[in-house]
Length: 154
Image (tube, rainbow, N blue to C red; front, side, top):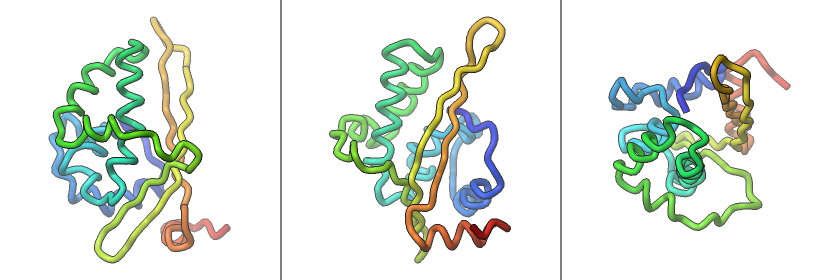
């Protein structure tokens, strides 16, 4: 869950929020700490609990299955944050709806559909798993803002 690279647009979108993060250096590049820490991105997410539930349950499954060597340690750290264990226990109410990241700052509200790909890469000793997150504008305002951040006009 460590963020290794962002594309130019994602870097610009999240740069608007990063100065407000007050995260310890040791977790500041971990996507789930950024999402779940009370001083992280969740302060800008009106739908935080429902959105975070998906990811917290995924880490819980990884920890229980032993599929990721650091998953149990990550799960323990996340469950120390207020509201995370409650979010993990939320019913999966939107199985047919796209997972949507909502970000609210001042009068600007952004919405992105979220999708992930997980790829197993050969590596010395054991396969290495790479997760790629895709964020697609979920409404016209978000689409206009994203297009304004890039040279892309299509």
